[in-house]
Length: 81
Length: 157
Image 1 (tube, chains in turn purple, red):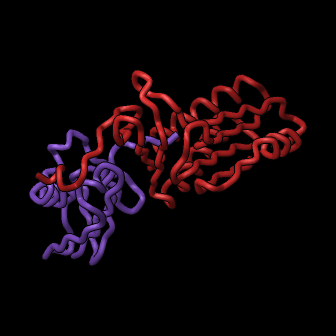
Image 2: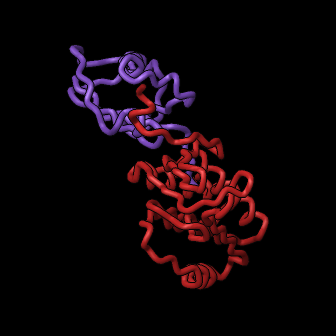
């Protein structure tokens, strides 16, 4: 499956823009996606806990992403207003 | 109950007089309009000068979330209308970033609802700020934590 990572704010700077991750399985835990991002970018060292949004919902690392292609937003705590 | 929620661009003109006039003529049972206007600060953290505030956001989800907030608060406080307009893009100090307007039967509900809507917008709507100021660029994380922006080459070293 393909997971399209859509980073915003400080995570966009870190990842450099949108990115596609490929997984052999057709479902994957958010935890595994974060581990892959950690290996590639060391996001835990940024000191900002990411918020993960899938299908318009905030999900935790135990959430299972399913399907052939899924969009996942990687964002910091919101700061509107 | 009427809901008026919009994400506006930096160049969109906000006509506050028209908004207040519309609200005040909408329902003869209502006696209170409360209007909150968020603007870009010109000075922050020990008088550091702000040149611009850049807003980005997940637009579709931002609109859905603002609609949800407006509906829930309108129901909770029996409001006649809730307006939430938020701008995205690059804004200068003094420019309007956010407008919340509430029409209610009484002032207490109107004030309470407006404050609650504001806090929820800040906490729940996926919008992000980059502060460009005299001593560099800072990402604003959550409610006021600032992280200095680094170039990508520096970040990945």
